[in-house]
Amino acid sequence: MKVLIAVTHLLGTGHLSRALTLGRAFSAAGHQVCVASGGFAAPQLNAEDIELRQLPPLRSDGVDFTRLLTATGEVAEAGYYDQRQAALCAALTDLGPDILITELYPFGRRSLAAEFQALLTAAQTLPQRPVVLASIRDILAPPSKPKKATQADTMIAKFYDAVLVHSDPAATRLEISWPVSEMLQSKLRYTGYVAPPAPQPQPQGAGLGEILVSAGGGSVGDALFEAALKAAELMPNTRWRLLVGGSDRADRIARLQAKGSPAKIEPTRADFRHMLPRAAASGSMCGYNTALDLLQCGTPSVLIPFDAGNEVEQGLRATSIAPLNGIEVVISANLTPESLRAAVQAAMAAPRRATKGLQFDGAAHSVEIAVNMANQR
Image 1: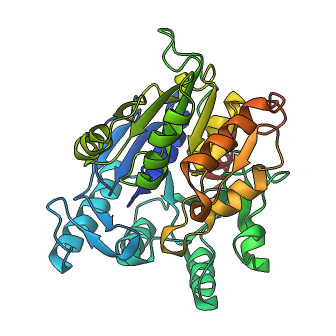
Image 2 (image 1 turned 180 degrees about the vertical axis):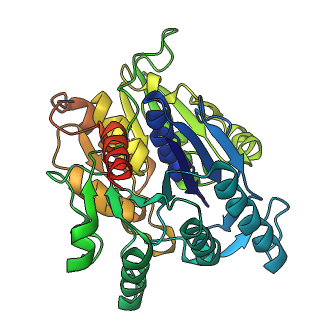
């Protein structure tokens, strides 16, 4: 079958990473996959066996997701959005998919509603209408106004066959973060967590015995990195490694290195997941993909949930997994070198966390659900 996944990441790279993991699962099952990506390129992510079609890219202006910027840093105007919409609909027409998946929309990306609605409308006119699915993570940003949930329900009822919820319902249900109507409940399909296979340790030993500090692939995490620089000085017998992301990572790394610290500072690495199994501990935010990496590896973990711009998603996720062994949570308002060191030491001293019991096969299960629905048309 032919599968089209439409995704736009605006700040970090988590949405694209999850879409690519899902795409690789379809490809591994013998299906033709195209991922239409509307965010900035993220070459560190694995797009093996996937056609990755790049739309004219957008990113958010910091945490302002209503103000979107082009590759040149200018505010996107109507003509730029028209180019994106045309490219997205062309991907649909060129592929003629049996399965169409929109990542996050209509539960988010409301600033891009026009292009998603154009895509969904165009899908209705194909010779054979594809199965249309929404793909969402375990926890969403709760709607700030009731009408946002109502609008999402309207779109789901009009265009979508089902909603793939990439969570283990035994751990986290959608109701924690989003109002679930009777109609929406009938559309939900819990898949388990969408994660790559559990990583094997990095063969050259990178990460062994280290404190790994990361903030995903976006230009965020400066407060965490600043605290980690000083925390490394407070733990001179332990190696600290900071992995810095974002398109401006070279400048950010230079600024951090100029402060002087025993910590090693370098760009985000494609083998980050493989550094975790033997790491002494991890200090990170609590995005979906990072949380799954930590749960799969059992690494002692300090979580500093991203909460700028009134974001609550990562805080909800951190709270949901905090009872597990070896997980400490430090809110950003309480983040200091001393609090980070204390949390790292507490996580390292806790009993090793079990890595079994949660469903991490969500990508394969998503493929099964989607293909079965397409076969039943």
